[in-house]
Image (tube, rainbow, N blue to C red; front, side):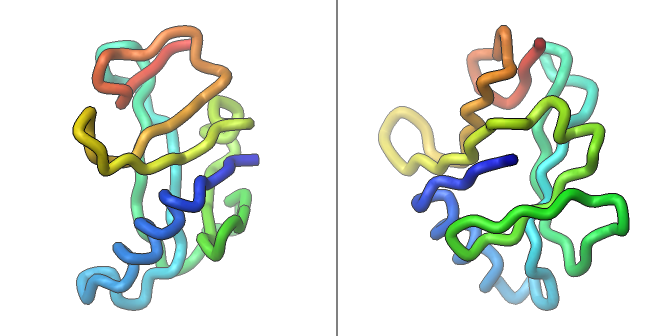
Length: 108
């Protein structure tokens, strides 16, 4: 399961209200090869799930994750910070053995 903090949920719901996201109601979280640590996180908005997607919902946010990415993301919490030390989404991933300074990539 992937968790979403209340603050991240508020931000996601706000972003989904943007006219550019019209018709989209899901947040897709995935892991791709790349980044300075080997694997990187990706977030996209989607209108509909794919048949093989795993689906989660927390704090009113509907999440999608493909099975391959879920292996890397089980137990991860998506958080949002708007403080002086960096504004944006952050992944608190208990599976990551190492992550880069920017927090956008990780390795196992």
